[in-house]
Amino acid sequence: MQLSAEIRWFWHKTPNSDFQKWFHSTEHHPVLAGGGKLRQDLYLLDKNQSEIGLKIRNDNPGVEIKGLIQASFTELKSAPFVGTVDLWSKWTTEVLELPPDSTIMVEKIRWMRKYISFGTDIHELQLDAYEMPVDNLILPKNGCNVELTQLKLANGAMWWTFGFEAFGDLNILARSIQSTASELTNRTPPLLVTELQASYPSWLSYALGD
Image (tube, rainbow, N blue to C red; front, side):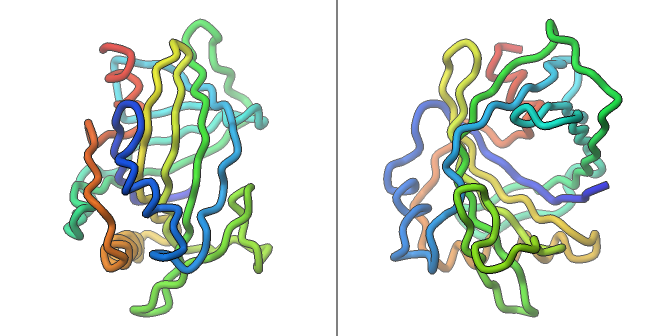
């Protein structure tokens, strides 16, 4: 079981060009963002609920199950990153199968930044194209991912999402996501204009006309 504290925003078309440049800029960040590879995730489409998400990640074995543990776990107040953070848990099983007629393919190109905390200090790890640390083969147990992702639905609709995902021990998740948002605020991000704050299950229902 993996716990995470998450907040995510979605919007149509392309992000504010200034925000996109800011996310990738080494003028504002000490290292380049990692990732950038195309992948395809297969999601179970269940418009009757938004508290459980099931997906097959890029043809990996098994089904990922993601469940909402606590809504309104904490709040971000570091403008422009303001909103309600939820607590989620994730499991993987190779026993379940997703019915093909109830799934939808989402193509993703994701860029990621990964942060770890040392007391009050925030350190950003340099990631490669596979989102793995360049100078350390072992992923940290506790930290926070910040991602900017381009999405393409099977119907051709283009979306973007930006989000924070703190991972690790329950007792430090709230502090980790808040300190990461505060650090990024100190890097003078431009305004990010989004359409909705949502989880992936909620966004899929919204995007496909629930």
